[in-house]
Length: 226
Image (tube, rainbow, N blue to C red; front, top):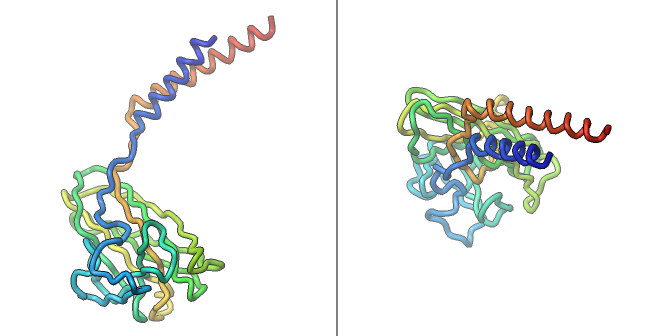
């Protein structure tokens, strides 16, 4: 009886191992900690084509606020407000290595500028080869403050079509109403890893493991009735 239980647990352990584990983060400076920034500032506004301020990230439209002490970061000390000086801002990260046909998982932390209570929205774009895949995320701003930002982890998967891929993020808060923004979606802790994919043999092992537990259960019930 003990041997059967141990065999079942070992089988389930092998299943977990074959499902794969997350690899190294492919994004450089995903928490926006390094660059040309005076740490005495609570935030600085960066317009489009403003030059190299945030390491490995460029402002490619509108403007953004690079946040320091103005509010609580999700990871480290800095983060981004994707809406700068009454503009929806867009940023683009440095290209990272990908394998064609592989699936990658993008994760990032999202909140919103708490100075306005309306819902915040951002657009995330995975660019790999020709074209890209767009994803829209929203954040319920109500009740959050500078010291309690309520950061939430968002994620999506994309399939690489090129040996190099890129990520872009932009604010679309209230964009459907044609309004300019200064209180947009907040972004921090961006990371990309190869998505874990179970091997086909995993499912065979899972069946064997469950069968083992079934046999164990039957034996246990039988011995309990004698």
